[in-house]
Amino acid sequence: MIRRDSHMGLLFKIVLIGDSGVGKTNLRSRFTNDEFNLESKSTIGVDFATKNVKVDGKVVKAQIWDTAGQERYRAITSAYYRGAVGAILVYDISKPHTFLNLDKWLEELREYASDDVVIIRCYSIC
Image (cartoon, rainbow, N blue to C red; front, side, top):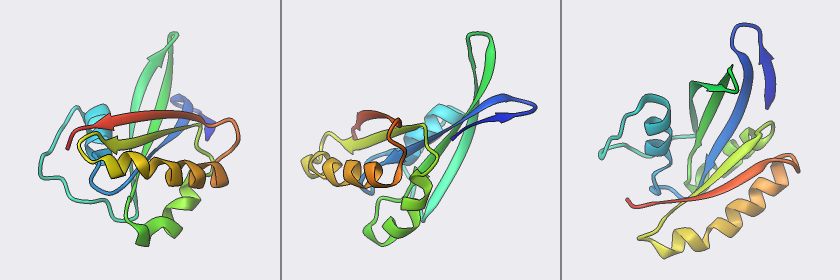
């Protein structure tokens, strides 16, 4: 979702997608708060954080949505794909099945997100 925030300029919604335990929460925490927690727990449902970033002299608010990777939350998180301008597909390079599962995440993203969503693939090591 790109929308105008009267105080902050533009607002961009970006979703993190991937299997449980691949590092989505720490990716969000590192970007928004410059924090990393080896003991972070699995996200339940959806959580988000924001960070203001200057782009070409303008302030842009990035809203980073951290979606649960467990199957039981798939129905909840699919609604959050709508309105996203960006999606980061995350997998753990030390767990090959998480890379193979990106196809199902991409399929779900394409079903619920707009056609012009920008998609990035990112690996982590957990």
